[in-house]
Length: 400
Ligand SMILES: *Cc1c(COP(=O)(O)O)cnc(C)c1O
Image 1: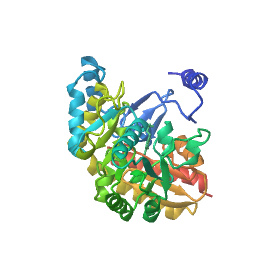
Image 2 (image 1 turned 135 degrees about the vertical axis):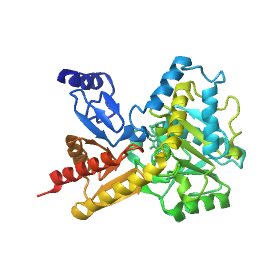
Image 3 (image 1 turned 90 degrees about the vertical axis):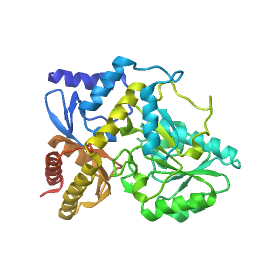
Image 4 (image 1 turned 30 degrees about the vertical axis):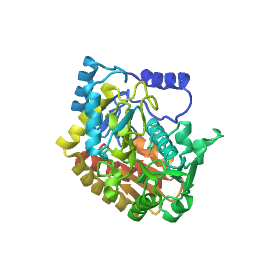
């Protein structure tokens, strides 16, 4: 493809899509950890489609599963049973909380389902409807999920917000305790906040929230949309804290690149929804479910979680060396392969531009944090190359 087609992609998207994203490059094709632009230019992709492509681009088993299912039956609606869909539900039962799931298409929808479930459950258990959420959390862009999000910038202009959400300071158990009332149905949190700046919860906090929820008879709901699916080193982030929530939500990497979300519940919450109380036309689409099954399968076959531990250690060590070298850097934060390089000043955007110019794609998590989300099967060689690119970019930005 030519220069013109690069400009054409940008022109078409800019002219005909609403202006909701600050987009930077045109991508045509992806393979593994790499993506290619229209001029044959290539990047190492440490965004993984914002934590969606756990196995990188075009993983052969995922692609094959998508093709086969698309040729068999691509959609049948939830008016009918389908075995691929059922197999994914069984998988989520086994690797989840031993209960049932509700399948949908995105993270926001999974959290919507969690909020609705908490309200149905709370209504039947003492008229409880409030949900305690965390400051700096991110739960999505629908009206309910942005109302649950602890970031004013996401809510700006959309008042009145949905009532019934109270906020507590993340990693401050007393603040959660103070926010819980006799109207509280659930406490909802990310064990590692992603969009909110790559901030892991402390072990005392997550365990404390679990104990508090038990004490008060309140549900604990984990948003595993970004930190789950192996991203932080265990299949679900809550596992590394030694607790089990009453329900959790998954999306992003769940569908192997296709739109898929899930609300996964404990047995006690698996019959709160009844026929007609919730639904979705596309939710649990067989092609997305087939892709998801292929991802879980590859995690086992390729020992993906072991690679997360290995690459996380490599990346953390590399980034920490850079923090020592550059006084403009504050620290490395995160868990597994959800790592944030924190700058002392709000210059994450400048660093991202520099990285992209050098051939590495990464994300932001607020104005001062560059967030790295490499594929979970990234190789040693690609990790080393990325660390060199980061070093070069810091040198270009901060070196004398
Ligand atoms: C991305 C994200 C969501 C929203 O997911 P969408 O698929 O964009 O609706 C919700 N919660 C967390 C923690 C996320 O990272």
